[in-house]
Image 1 (cartoon, rainbow, N blue to C red):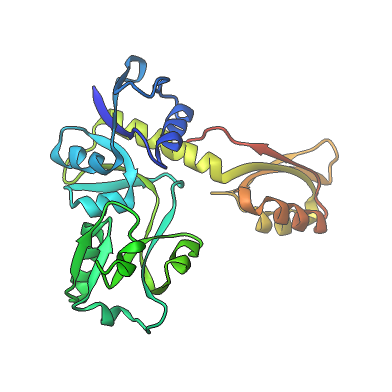
Image 2 (spheres, one colour; image 1 turned 45 degrees about the horizontal axis):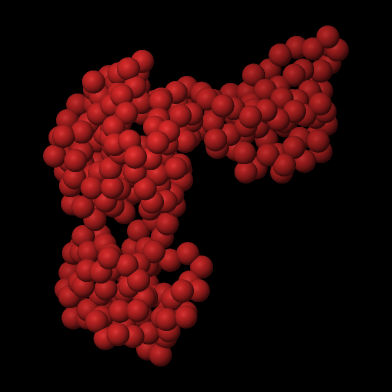
Length: 281
């Protein structure tokens, strides 16, 4: 039976359960449950701390897990990313006192406070920059003011918290993270895990795309298909009206209204948008 780790709490937990449900897997209804067996799909789900999941997968105790890319890199575990799940996005940056000018080179020899020491060390190593990494479990923004560190490395969203602490972001992003499925390095992926990955990829794709149907005069069909090329090729069907055809194609959800405007301008009519709940491509 396939053993899969799922975050038991934190920002990834609810979204992980939701995507697994959409992929056809049973999930726990009581947050106190530590294990759930999905007999129909031959999977055991283990609800674990997000920071521990990569360790369990890398050691071979579990075949796969859902965690953050940041947590995978920080763990140093013998596991690798299989697919990304398109949620739980975050950006990691360096931040330091506003009163000084900072660059990545100026980090050398300084004290860096972070909740992700492994991630920061992995970033600095190829740059040949040596620094003293101070591990903290949270609220790293206060570490500079309290004299524990010279700068920090942390998740940055709006930057308001940093500004309140007298800090500013500098340099390129250390990492752009999101939720991912991980598996053990160098190990053949079992059939049940291939199915799980394929199902989750289908959900991710279905969330990104919609199905667009429209009617178009034959003389304008090439121009319209250039706007909606689909993933491989649009489907074109004849209509009772001899000089018109019906076209169906997948388009990115975020581009839907712009695409509809462009189709209207080239003569398309009867433009309909349909949600995709699942797919295999």
